Image (tube, rainbow, N blue to C red; front, side, top):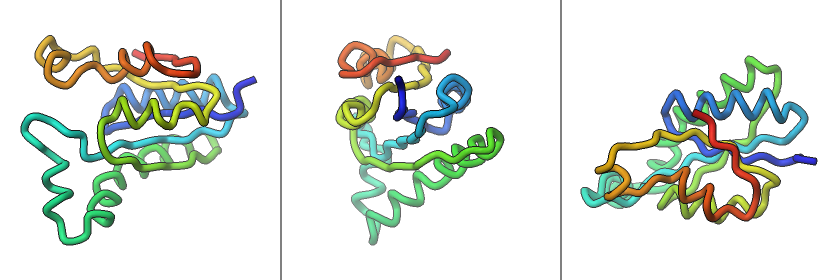
Length: 139
């Protein structure tokens, strides 16, 4: 029986679709939404912004707020609640590190362009291949 489900979310429609799927299919489970910020990249991106902020913990919470608020809004549509968690770093690594505490992972996939897969990698593919628990990939 699946009692605890991890749903990694970013600000994409596909991650929202994954959350809706998890809420539909695992309606009796405890759903935890995980948002990973500060993803390292060749251009440094958000990681640099966090490092340069006066209060990095506060900036991390600010960056995650919209995604977690949206997850709670979606859960409200289902008359339920979700837990929200924030991690910093590589999304695939953070998802995999957290996955072993859950019964399943439900996540969206972007597919990604060839350039995205070469530079950043495909998070869903990495999680699917390495997860210690079952993974459902929603498109």
